[in-house]
Length: 400
Image (cartoon, rainbow, N blue to C red; front, side, top):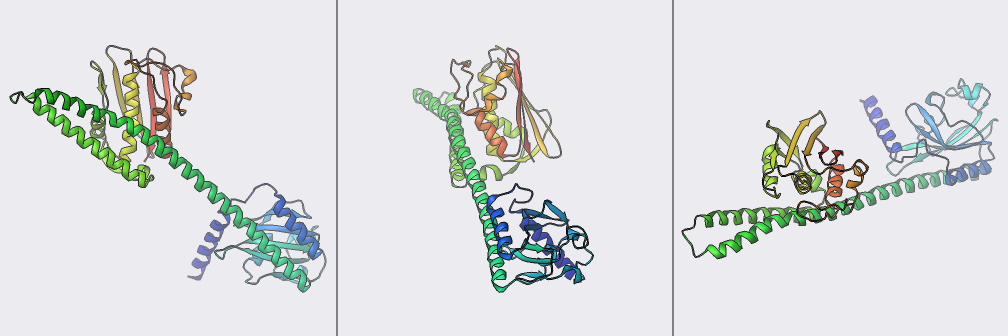
């Protein structure tokens, strides 16, 4: 039991050390000044900021030696971080059974004196030491001991500041990405609302002119269309409200669905031109994914496939397969195509090809950049293959 506890502590200690993202980084003036000061105060030719991993000790700062690291078996510092004292003093390593056979003691380095202050973080883990080394048997004065401890705390303070700054930068990046995602989602959702609103408006206008003709069976269909559009609009608005309060739900809230059922629902939100053929996967697939994010992706891709198609008999085909880790989709059309030089640029925010669609409208450049953001957030990739005047295939993956 004790051995297991020690192993767990060591694993947690290593994890804590790595959380500072300092290992194998370049020299930094702030740390180098502290080792220089330690050598000057303690009048020792060698001083180190040593960070102790499983198989090595690595020197974030070194004064008086040229090597960057040593094997853990030759480390004095591994003893210092488990010694239990505020500072470990070895007056004469040649007389200490722990170090008498150490190559740094018996070899050309001629390490005799060692004093190491453990670098203990806020959670109580010893990450390494600030240490001074000399070639002669000696001790430190009370003032030197106190100063070395103070310098050790300053090293730890700098490491803590470094970690907190990195954490803040990461959080700021996440917030920025979240805000961008919300803005793009809102823009795309507003666009999607136009379709059910248009259906409602058209149904209401026609219904008004037919209300006097009670015997007209078409009224019942128009009423059904109006109700269906209303329900879709309400669901979409409710989802927007939920995601505005907790943006992470857009990515993390996943449901198990049958692919073609979702695709058929999406198709009702997209304007399919007369004479167009839309082919769905022939087999039944059950997926677990963020439905709202997937709908936004597919609505945009299908809308583009229909809008930018100059053929009388347009064809759009959705294909699906999966690997161990990803869902893999293809959306292929026989439309106007995209020149190769724009295959990457089309996913940039606000980029447009300045080409009018089949309805003589220009694009806004919002849609595909939104798709790119959603797919990135879902851990997937997207790419395009296209030939001018022949068609385009969009390949995208979503992490399971």
